[in-house]
Image (cartoon, rainbow, N blue to C red; front, side, top):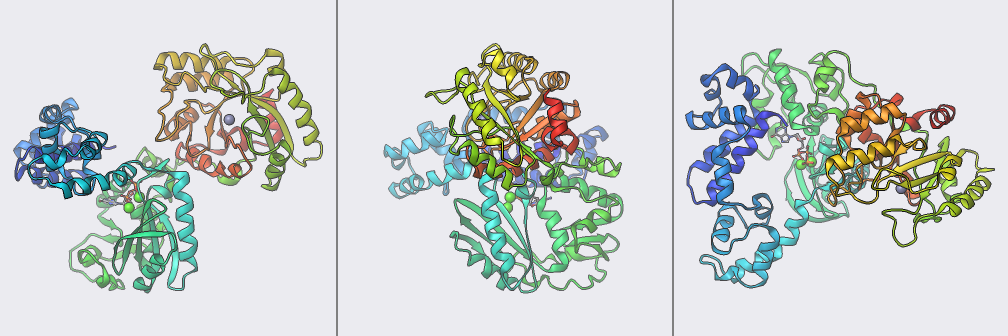
Length: 596
Ligand code: DGT
Ligand code: CA
Ligand code: CA
Ligand code: ZN
């Protein structure tokens, strides 16, 4: 997050806390300042370095707010905010996500009943305590109770793996609809972030109202949140889906704008300003004198919100395609996965963007389970499914017994020897290379839960932590580094053991871990299961920068889960991984050489 965004978030939080405290007017000026700081073309740290006048030059920022910006930039804290938080120690974001509950209500309920969390709010409503608070009644209480489950769900961001299929279903329908020229997903989903706030869909059409109708006609729609002539929002399969319609000529600029991220766009917009250009969702314009003709773009009248015509002034030099928008800034098209303002714009400028791994580069899965352990498909069925996909190879890696395995799921050394023969038989006429491996459990000291002789006889050993996932950083790092340094380990499976939205997992010192993996010639897994995505994007980036190898595997427990691969590939792309960084993007011979 940029410093500007950090300051803006803090100002917004202060506005809520002040409002909860019953303070008037001030919250509004904090919110206004937050917006202006967030969108300001220059970083606040630069303004602070330049002096007070520069800081106070931000719209809506007077002396008092300028003090706070300086304080934050210099100390990383705003004392008044710390005090406000202490006075009102509530989970503001969660509580205000309940429909009908604003900051003021939160303040009142904290004063009266000490409510700080959603759970406490629910308990108080269930106990009939809220109706007793002055200004509240039975009806308000019932409303709150009714809206809590919804708020709870909305609090949690959707998993990429749940949101993608929803988006693909609506895209397929839209692309089939007559008024639709083009349809694409935008937002965090197009950037393949691991979690998604809402699904953004963008449509090009000459007949926006008809395109909106096509969207609303989707059978997955449970609830229409809002609808107008150029956009609509619905709830479908438990998530919010926003659809915007633009004229075909503005599709590129709109796609660029709505793909985000916000930080990426703010950075680009500043580059545009430096060149005397203005960029927005309608195109790239020469900034010149306002009021000059906006040729060929008289299609804005049907917009629902503000009149956008003032945004279309100046000669338009790009916007039909996304590539044009970047080209106008002398940049190559930056892949959506990189658009997080993590150095991709600088890299693009220097012609140093990575040549990212592509979905088709991965040649086989190195981490899969069968009905020998907790998988649902037979060895034969998994091999056939991999061959059907056109893969070159597949590794069967069922669970071994050991720490973290419950209910007799894992195979002991005897079972593994027995499976060796079974896999060899199944591989005989498979048509693809089949490797026999194991997913061994990493014990508390970093040892593996399988006998040395069996490990040595297998083609591939994945070492995965399945227990002790609450360990402190140093313990976790020592343990994972020991597992990586075990002479039989080939791949460190789902290194942190996290489950997104569910379990934080280990938080190892990544610099140490990736250096150890690079030294030992052990691959770090990018587990493609959408609940895991482990390693995550930022850890992958550290790994590839350190020269470590990664393996993009699905951990499939059935044939259908082999399709998780794409989530791993795009997560690896978010980690700037190239084909050469990826073990299972190599031909079989190179893979076997690595495993030796
Ligand atoms: P999400 O939905 O929380 O996972 O994240 P996004 O990135 O999909 O964000 P969303 O849905 O709020 O907006 C979609 C994109 O639209 C966002 O990535 C950038 C663009 N956008 C939306 N509002 C603004 C804004 O106020 N300023 C700028 N620069 N861009 C915006
Ligand atoms: Ca979104
Ligand atoms: Ca959205
Ligand atoms: Zn597994």
